[in-house]
Length: 139
Ligand SMILES: [Zn+2]
Image 1 (tube, rainbow, N blue to C red):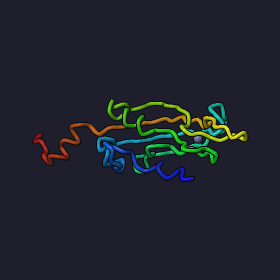
Image 2 (image 1 turned 90 degrees about the horizontal axis):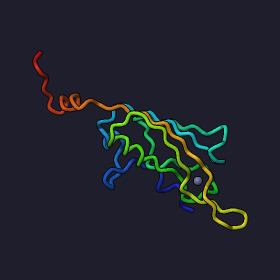
Image 3 (image 1 turned 180 degrees about the vertical axis):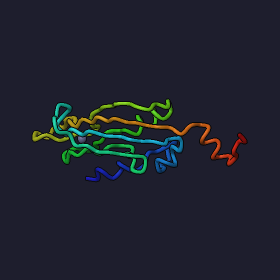
Image 4 (image 1 turned 90 degrees about the vertical axis):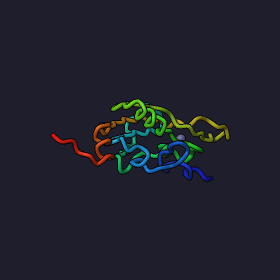
């Protein structure tokens, strides 16, 4: 059992894994809440996880189900897509990629359901340009 090793590193950009603030310097604000429901989407008391710019989500949100193999939910693609489109708010949901073994030794899709609310804010192009050039315009 080596599950959990490849998940929750950094977000990868062009195949490299970089810290979030270096991969996406244009992002000024990141607020993400993820609700995790190990017994399916109707579960009433989900686990909650919070992420910010200094503690961003990894490529995958880890599945808490200990019977789940290769589980998790890929949030990296959603965040990258939002940044590419300069979106500021999105609610996304999905189910675990993993499989669990039943008592009859059959494999079934893991039931864990994930819902995320993602808020992003961006630095203005002008602010980034000014900082890069170090030039202040005369009033
Ligand atoms: Zn799972």
